[in-house]
Amino acid sequence: MRVVIVTESFPPDVNGVAHCAQQTARHLAARGHEPLVVAPATAGATSCDAAAPYPVVRVPSLPLPGYPQVRVALPSRRVAAAITAHRADLVHLAGPFVLGVRGMAVAARLGLPAVAVYQTDLAGYARTYVGAGEGAAWRRIRAVHGAADRTLAPSTAAVRDLEEHGVQRVRLWPRGVETTRFRPQLRDEELRRTLAPDGEVIVGYVGRLAPEKHVELLAGVCALPGVRLVVVGDGPSGTALRAALPGAVFLGRRTGDDLARIFASLDVFAHTGPYETFCQTVQEAMACGIPVIAPAAGGPLDLVAHGRTGLLVEPHSADAVRAAVAALAGDPALRAAYGRAGLAAVEGRTWAVVGDLLLDHYADVLGARTAVAA
Image 1 (cartoon, rainbow, N blue to C red):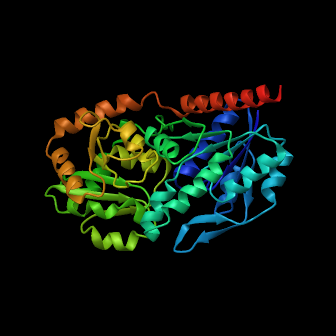
Image 2: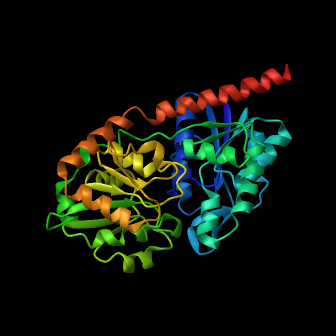
Image 3: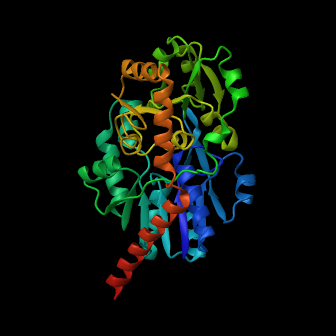
């Protein structure tokens, strides 16, 4: 099968859309299919693309004002040229918003089936950044996903949101986790001594440092005795968060095995963002045997079994986050029990398993097209 993956972001970018698109392309290639990736141009892309076992076409892009880590593709004929030259059987649209709209239009013009993967809560971002615009965000989502043969949502909460806002032909497609990379055996006592020299319980956040993540909700954690907060990631809120989280250790952006070692060396993982359609970092923490605290909203509702693998807390509540951290920090046996249960819960969620589920969706879409043509 020849598949063109049109994605709004791709490595070396570090975010959920980029990671999922990369894993999709890798799985297709591993299963003997022929993927082609179309993505925005970004710094460092040349060496990353050269190492990929599939071709990558880059489209000119500009950094998002005020958020240079995010790049937005410019109008380009390369999308149509790439899809046509690849002789695609199907177009896969990863987090379609700007570049994906162009990919959808090309697929429609060429009569190709399109599968759109919903990954970003644009309405939640509109509330965070402009305090309005949710209606416009949902109109955009309906327009883009309504033209697809099938929309794949990563969690039951995301499926429900899409259907309640009029998006049809929605199916559930979760995300995988690299269990060979993220694993408890990477726990590093030397690193732990560096991060918490007085033997503190280490509570970690991993993700973008941006307004929609509400990392400032961890401020109360910094005041807990015997607790050390470690923050991994970068973004436009970095400077403000360093002031808001006194005593926290900021490690900047980390990736690959280095990130996995940090995850495995935590005692508690705390996520604060209430707008996650999935939340990959929760799965990565669980794969390392780390108990999780997350908002009772969006993707974490599918991932965290409250009182068994971690704790779900009231969204936007700093007091709830602080109380949950305090409860786990003071109970090593409970942390260990939650960690074991979390590890058991994700052991079968590999990208190979999830990738094969995606191939089943592709087959359904192609079969439906064939049936209509007949």
